[in-house]
Length: 81
Image (cartoon, rainbow, N blue to C red; front, side, top):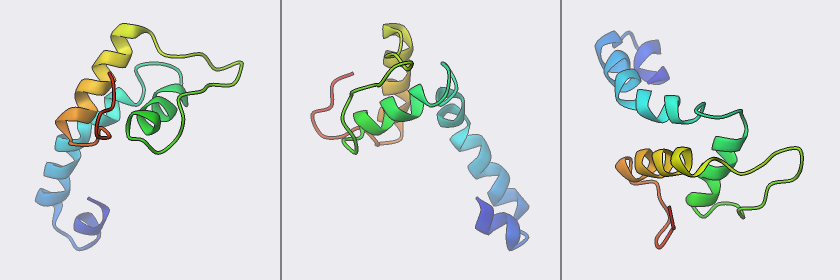
């Protein structure tokens, strides 16, 4: 998206922005950095542990995040929602 913008391809940059919007929104459905850490865990990049004062996501938000990640093909193989 940034490369397209810098190259003056505003239509492509705009298209990429709107395609990524569901992912951007999902990263802020709860207080940051909880959704980001949860997403990284679902992607198999880090463990699921949270250190206080951070706590895990609400189940319904976790499902929503997993659905968005799955739509982008980002869930780790065998990752549980």
